Image 1 (cartoon, rainbow, N blue to C red):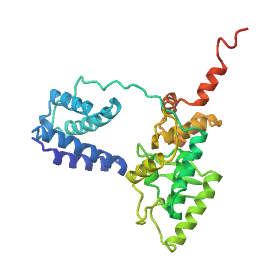
Image 2: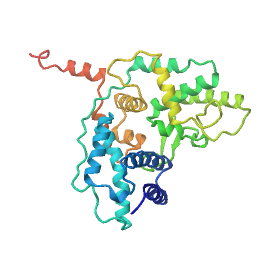
Image 3: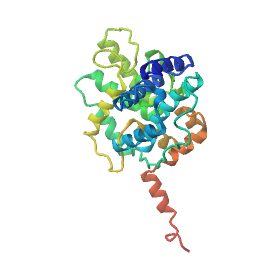
Image 4: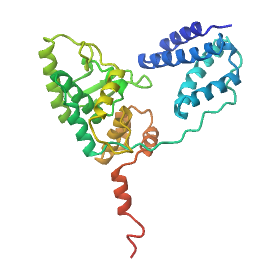
Length: 303
């Protein structure tokens, strides 16, 4: 019989050896802890004692606690990976997940920010008594809008990752490195941010690019907190959900609208295949889409 924490620690070591990124490993660690806590509360002390019925009850528990299908599939995949490791190591012979299908996901339409909402966001980001925090927030949101970086990638950007005309994104999703361009308008604001940091911290070498009051890395949680505070200061359409993912979608939408080809967009977003980018774009809706659709109205254009 195998206790939860022992197997989790062994599994995390295994994926570290396999080259998983620090962000991915941390995500596994956090999700597996929650899984462990649930099953221990159900008096299931050993991983290999989880049954198919236990698994179904857990899924029902997640649903009753407000998790959507996509989230449940992601969480359950972590447990499946752990069980898969145990089978691979011959700690178990049969998975309790046999013949259990992933939950069907209902694709949600995601509305990107429009031009006016983007202007509001950047204006609100500047409002802070501290010049450092004000300029940091402006550059942070501009970077997300100009490059499509994820919140986790923004948080993990190091000073050495910022080159003359590009940003090197290391250990992105899927453990892939990539480069994204620094546009002239973003570069101008970065110059200001760099100058303010040097003046404030007396040319001290800072490991991370976006830093907090305490001169340490700006965490994902802190970024979410900044976004929630700014959300209260701006007026968005009711259909818009303000999040880091929405800003990433906004970048994709604007890039296509401004003429970027889908292959370049796919590389910039860190997708392993163009088909992933195509699926990504299928969930986008915008005012432009509505205007274009009306323009091509069947009845309006009868001859």
